[in-house]
Image (cartoon, rainbow, N blue to C red; front, side, top):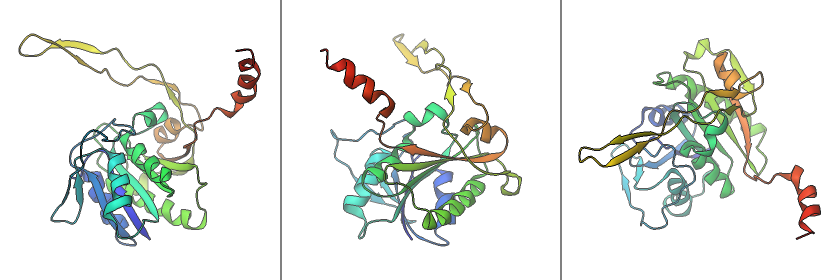
Length: 248
């Protein structure tokens, strides 16, 4: 299979190299990734800045853009033939629950799906994760299943793997997104010149982390696989909205 591999932690990230090594054993893999860390960039595109590409000694392409830029540029310009699959990761840290809204890792996958390709985002849970090989092996298993069971045209898979040795992972679970509490308050400080600066606080604790959620799976040593819909329409509200909007 011809795979386009990207991420949001940057072209030098350990997770990217680990996933490339694993996938390239079975597939043709092209790596196109940001030239620096672009975590929490979501689906941003660099429409005000020209994109520049540098091919590194190991064959990876480094782009001065966002994860979405990398996927878009790869499919439109850099690849001689369209990929059959877009894979994003391995992210250094989980993308669970509401985190997917901000995730550059998930955004690279959704960009692939916007361009008509099946896509997977993969993250390794933990503050300083180390078992990237475990996550890479899980992704390989999932890709093999996708060959026989393709994704619907409006969905991607969001994969989170516990930071454990592969033989300690309890299995793979299909999960739904959990939810977090509101993020912690921002912190105000001063720079060396005395001017005010602000830092985001930490992510909020879990609000909905019960059985069946991605949070629950990771906490119990399972790999979590959550199908995410690209179409964000709230279909359950369409009928009611149609009724009251007639009064405007």
